[in-house]
Length: 138
Image (tube, rainbow, N blue to C red; front, side, top):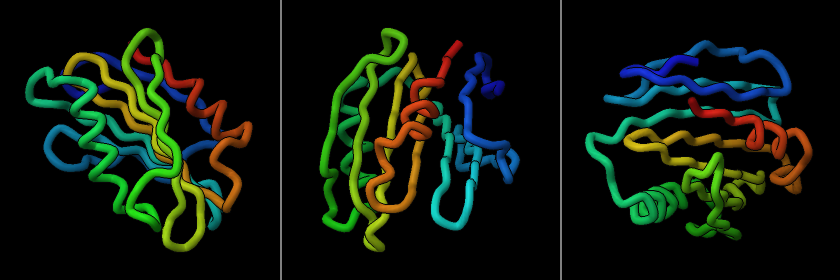
């Protein structure tokens, strides 16, 4: 998929998206892949206005997105490298008891975020692990 301002990325999903790309807020593009009524994947690309301190940016993004979890915090957070780029992998539970997993990677001024939701116990299933591992940033 092409990114506004140049560059591209690819990700493999278990099935074709049911929704086409939608323009989010300024500098944000989002693709929704609804698998069924119980699970879905979202791919988002956010363009930062300037290069930020990557770790601080991801920490702030995790804190802000923790409102999606039942407890207001992530159950697990792992700092990683993806294609040699800084990344974070966070898992939590929604208020309805579903799993939510957010995986974010920063390259220069772009943040690539994969979000997966599904039934309890699904956050580390093979399909979701493959989806995250398939992210290729050019």
